[in-house]
Image (cartoon, rainbow, N blue to C red; front, top):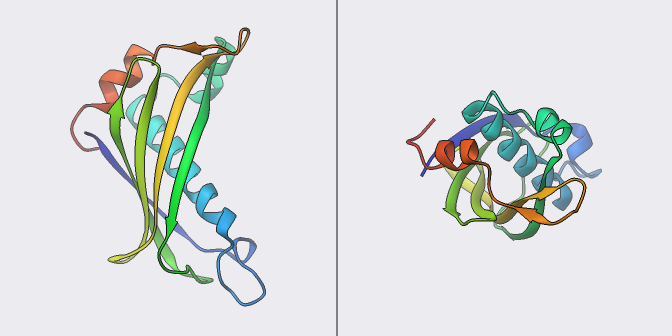
Length: 136
């Protein structure tokens, strides 16, 4: 499946008074990784256009395993890849790394829903096709 890498840095706003990243910062970095992956692989369907067409992306569940703390000014990499695609959802695996060290692993189940009915809709074909293609 397709893999995407996003480089970022740990900023002051991501940390506590001791310079250690808050647990919620990992969720933000993971969200940025997923969003930028979709922007890269399906540039013709940005989230804003999907929303205008009544399609919303939602997170059904997230599992996270914290391994090591991130610190202020660390350069980090968010690695995002699709693990599986089903009719109405996909499972995305992510890792947040500092060099070769894995700081956290995430498993994210995402789905698409109708803005009007709030019911699940099938994964749009453009996304499904792009997500199973080779590495970005």
